[in-house]
Length: 387
Image (cartoon, rainbow, N blue to C red; front, side):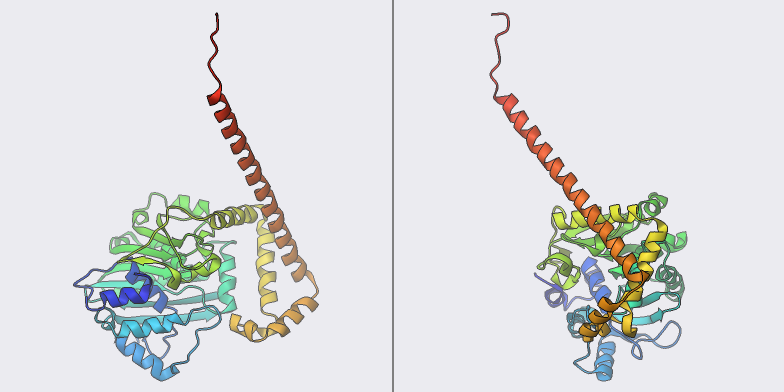
């Protein structure tokens, strides 16, 4: 079994009552949360639940077959919606509680939706970073403080929807959505934590050491599971809380963030024994770089980088993609402090990278020397002292 579509075919005729939920189901719902369900799925307390099959039909009637999710989200997400709508397992899952809240003033990109299955289990799913530049700005804000606005909203949303339905809960999300899922679960009231079967983060950014230490003995930690590809970059931002699995992917580098490249084995992932060197190196470099920047330098970098991205009034990455030449010309001709601040920060990043590379070479050289010395000592013949 290679991908999510083959999994759906394999599980197509089994409902959740017949074959209980698993980590792959959670990933499917996390991917579906990227779909803009405005005017299709009702908000909390504002309408009836709708089956996934009905939602699929309504979405494509509203948007047509050639709808684009933007510059960074894979088109396979829409194909996934169609595939789920045609399967016995997913077609009757109830969708409700949809929210999509983007606010430039408080730098927030937050979206969530609930998927209620026929075995009295509801998935509360948070959307990851979408095409909006403010969403990426909010991601950068994670280097400055916790909680960011979407994390706060995630906790509020979790508490609100849990009162609407008394099901057992699985909290999940891909990318930033996974980080929000973990934050909300960690900070939820104790009685709500008892209802959580699992918390799934699919290549979601982690948390700073100090924040993780504050929750190391929390009862929910044992139910947190993070899934990361073996060359993960996004999921290696800061540190992992709880257990994790390393997944094999058909792609390379940052493209592995696309979960449609992950390899499956039945109702599980095909796992690797360790992260590959680029992922470990990135994790080490980012932590070292952020630690070297003062709080003021981090704040200035985030603000200046955001200003450069939004040159010419761009609000999404698609806006930049459609006007690449205009954007590059504006960036090159841009003068002032913002450009210098970003340049200086990246120069510190390059300096830190060179220092870490040099340290790794010294360690490798020393290890080889020690191994050579060990072999040399082992080959020496014993002397007959006293003869």
